[in-house]
Length: 221
Image (tube, rainbow, N blue to C red):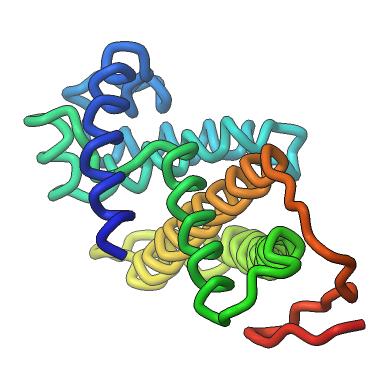
């Protein structure tokens, strides 16, 4: 919607400027200098990710930062842009993304022509989607663990030269899974932000039946 794009353009510019001097750099997140090589960045990410992963007792927010750093610095073009401008294409802040998402869902329900039960419908949408994100993350984590375990199962014989093509393939798939996990966590972050913002609202309405959200359809219970 035009109003969403306008809000993003006006508000986020000021937000980004206010945070730019406070936000740790991606290099600091990985603990590497700006002149680090691509291989050093990869090794630093793997080491810190193995320590910060929630399955190993780490914190989810730390893993999000590491994934964001790797997604940026692991991509040569994004890293170049980041080094030259300080921006990595992350876009709006979490709060603003939550506001825009909430606006989009409010608009979606209003387009149905009936605002009765609007807050309940929007909450159902958000919670249903969050459940799907959780399932996706479990699948991604399981696939990542299996690939990581299998990475060193195939080796080149001693004394042979050349690149281990199997490892290249596995690394490419692991990078894809890392990117997918970062994207999923980011979306989950947006929906959690929208849920938190939704708690600030209340609605004066006539008694309405409870609703169940499934896919894109609401049915009265």
